[in-house]
Length: 223
Image (tube, rainbow, N blue to C red; front, side, top):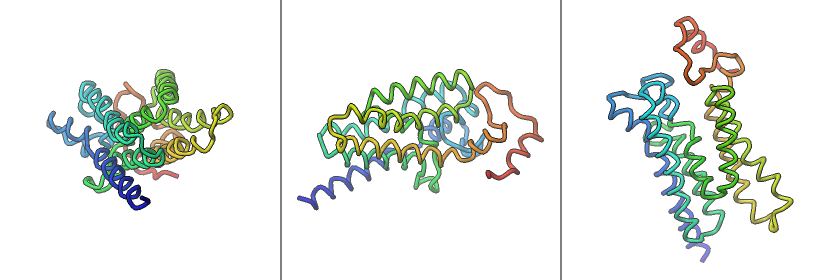
């Protein structure tokens, strides 16, 4: 029985990772004749697609990337499998999006896919995180800052709810997923964090920087 559970977990982890590797931004940009990896920041996520291709293409990425997470995690959840299998599948899906084996272990930042997987795991927390994302984005116009606040809020909100949790052990898979996803997000945003600290991070709607600013931004390695 234990071997069967391991086989099932391996199968869903693999499926989740492969679904995560579907490069939505790369495919949408290619339809428009743009190699997104050679444009802007080189990232295949929605923000770079918005800047390099346009709002409609970015909207497609914003809608499809969460769907990858919903599909990957929704299946084991719907089948009533062990919560740890659901958790492992969720993490694998975000890893597939962020560290795509077919793109040299490069990919998007994983935020949209993270929202998708957590929408299945805890819709209430996800909704609050989306609200925080929207408020932060409106106030600061920094997508990176809004993303980091949203993923940080996830595990914090789950911890705050532990007192009302009838079975704390049952909350462990959700907490683990939230913490690991937050760690992945911070790692994938490490360059954004460095630019935020230096005050040179791009804002949504901001005009392209002058060449000397761009050179300074590239030449300064993250601390």
